[in-house]
Length: 125
Image 1 (cartoon, one colour):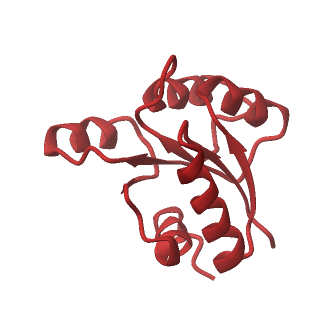
Image 2: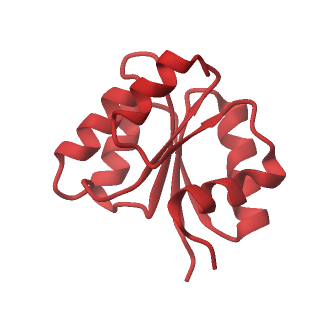
């Protein structure tokens, strides 16, 4: 089964590297969103199997997007993995308290990204 993952990040380079890593290494179908608003539209129209979501974005940050995904019955069950450059213990506790599937730090290793996401989501084949 081919997994569908939505990568949400305001940085073009991060989106491109994540897309290539997930498609080439894992064979997953990857959709891209440059903003929280775009991510919500894509997810509501056709919910992905998972969302990789940047924490720090202009206008709507990752935790706000996650809250909106959780509030929508169409996307409530979609697992979300946060991507962040901030790894302070207090922030980690805050994100763990949100109920996300996991947190990955940037910069990430493109060759390990699919494996790390699969492990967090229990997608081990």
